[in-house]
Image (tube, rainbow, N blue to C red; front, top):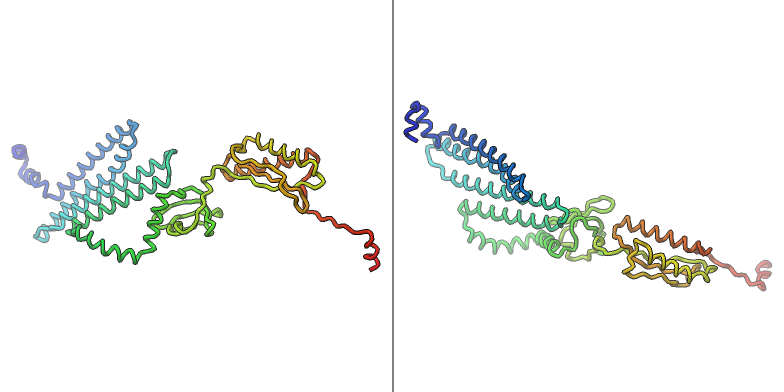
Length: 362
């Protein structure tokens, strides 16, 4: 190397010998390293795009910006140290700590980007559970942030063993002071572990005025979008003290109706009941594996009441009402086929003939 530099002009030779302490040359070297990284990244991007394995694409995308930042910031830190040392005439020990913090920050940044990329990729798949994916991503991000924070503390000279000892005592104080915050945090953990509902489920509580679609499950609160499109923010600790119903996990939806027939059509009740039962047994949207009941149930004040009790195959709310409408229309058609009719509230007034005259005279 020195023999090659001897052929160059003296000024250039001296400049090149001091390239690692010269700010201008360090900046030029950073620019060249950045260009090389861009070329290498472009080549790697072409290679990973040809593979069927998606994790390499996600990892490469996570490295792009942080590595470029490291290529520029590391030499900038070195150059800053030289400039400050020239003006201050003293060695700056804190610059080594700054470099360590830069490395830690870049590592955490790459990890966060990789977790975000994996989360987005998994959420795009059809066979995935959104709540589980988000929970794992949140726990992973929290884990690496804590590791990064502890490493930064150690870089500043803090004793981790002393910090953990203080955390044992301080944790009790913080726990008492932030009781509600911690109860919400652990309430959120219980939602993730017990899985009473997930994002997208329709939930309601008979204990509270809570009903709607779960939009987001956070560490402190769950956001539920009500059916009139109002956001409802519920602290997670509430769910450990109330009953929560999850209609989204229904296996069937129930049709339960009491249909009144006129007393004048009492002779036709038996055959109407049989035909309604046969119609439900052949209906393509009725689950015949579930309970199916059609019976004359009671003598009503103005009708003979038939009970219709059955279950649809669909659990979709809109489709359920379409099936229910079709069933009710067919029941009404069966009743009319036998020249019978559905009863409506009536009253019969009976006047005794022997008292009719007395009523007129008075």
